Each structure stands twice: as C-alpha cells, then as structure tokens.
Image (cartoon, rainbow, N blue to C red; front, side, top):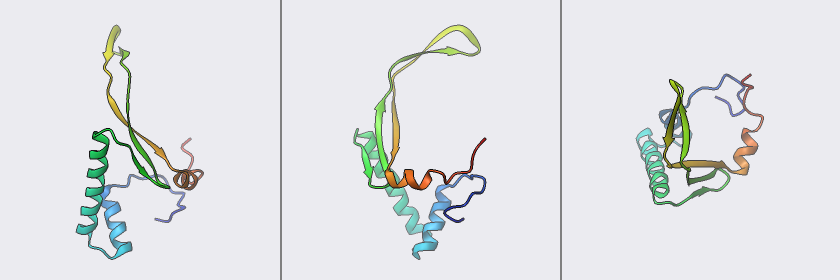
Length: 109
C-alpha cells in the first residue's frame, strides 16, 4: 500500500504492522513482534502510573480523568443513570503526523 493511497480505508492490525516492518528492515517477524509488543506494554505501563508518553513528531499519550455524568437509558427514557468518573487515554497527534494525515484520507461522506 502506498503512502498516499486514496483507496477505501482498511483496518491495519498489529500483525500487518509486524509484516510491513519485518519486510522493510530485514528483521524476523518474531523479533519485530517482540519489540512492538514491548513498546505497547511500556506505553501502557507508563500511562497506568499517570505519566504521559511523548513521541516527537508522532504524538502524545496522556491519561485524563472524566467527571461523573448523568446519562439516560434509551430503553427507559425516564430513568437517570449515573456514569462514574473514570480514566481515559487521550492521544494528541504531533505536527508531523497532523501534516501527513491532513488531506490524505478519502472523504467519508
């Protein structure tokens, strides 16, 4: 798949990434998988400890705490449901990623 492909978007899996990186680097798929898995594990571990993870030109992962909310049950519109506060991971893309992605995606009209 070319970088500027205007085809219908597809789901790219971890396996797809492993194969692409192995083909480009000459490393074995097993070695690429191990490095990719360790990277994801370490990002998750740092986020779980409240740290933010910054990857220059790629983006920043950080944990944000949501507030308690009152929701509505669509099956019982008169019933309020308390949605408790929780931690969510936010991703803010870096400038290089924003620039490369901007206009690169087909319209989803």
